[in-house]
Image (cartoon, rainbow, N blue to C red; front, side, top):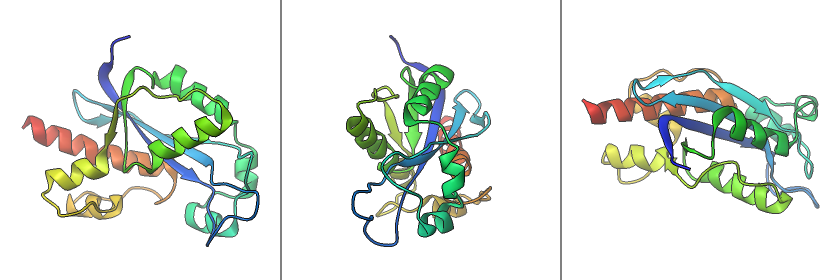
Length: 184
């Protein structure tokens, strides 16, 4: 099936985390998938969505709640990882569209969780690492965080940092600006 290049699906995940090592028997797993489709012809962000995912092999720690604002009660009401991957596949056509994230963390978390659970990887093979693209396009000697990149571009950071939908929205803003500059 040919790739659709009309939109890039920008994704940011939040995962269970701890201040130190995970408790015995727990592993880091996705608890929120932020999605923001980016229209390539205009660089316009087409909305944002938070897909809260119920963890199976871990609990949300107080540290994780402090970082993400997601509480154990909120994620306990989330959908399964399988259902979340189906949304990406059916509603965003993620297997036939290019997708992007800021760094490799999101890609590797999806790969690890899909491998561990036997769930089909929801994306196609084309991934854009916006973190690397930003550093290269700005001649930086190393990659920098998304908040710093947004500040360097003179863009406002919108929403709450470490919430998937807000981070996806801001990352899409970075990518959209970079693509529009390439076309200028």
